[in-house]
Amino acid sequence: MPTWKLVDGEGVTRYQHLCSACSEGKAATLAGGGWRLVRPGEPVSCRDCVLKCLLTAERLWGAEDAVRYAVCHHCPELDACELKGRYFC
Picture (tube, rainbow, N blue to C red):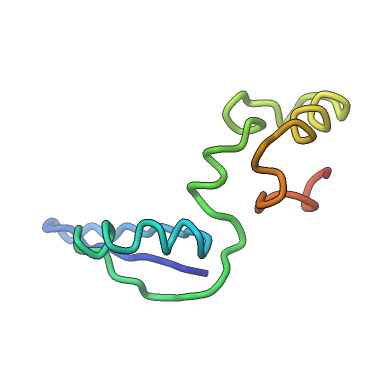
């Protein structure tokens, strides 16, 4: 998985796990901010993509199946969804 690592001035280590598309789109910005790409490849799930998920944003993971399926069905990100097929789609 594309994993980016940053050790800040206080010695705190931070990581970002991104999909390849998000990693490529943010690579220059991350590198400019002192982040290092420590591992390439595809992630289990992308932090940025998960934040776009309506189920996550609207806290619907515990909703009934019909509600979750409807939200997923209308999501414009469904084709690229890291979560698709894992839980209910």
